[in-house]
Image (cartoon, rainbow, N blue to C red; front, side, top):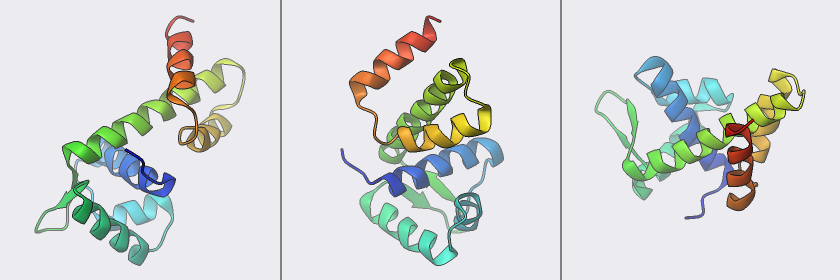
Length: 121
């Protein structure tokens, strides 16, 4: 399954906001990612058509099993990479920013090795 970095960011953001707030709307995603509401609306329409999200009558966004799988994968990568960077002395803010960039490009093999290393540190 290949999905663009921006789409991964949207899905991860929906997951994080859902965990924080319980209810997520497009405007919440726009604010969190600092993008325009129309951009989010287009993305959500595409995600709905592709089966990554559902939108309730009140505008609440929910990840489908397909969307949740991607969001959880990206979020796990973000957390592990952040922890690894902080373990080598990178400050938390920089580690989180860099993890957001790395999480999309790191190979599965390298990520699994990094995850095992962090788990055993």
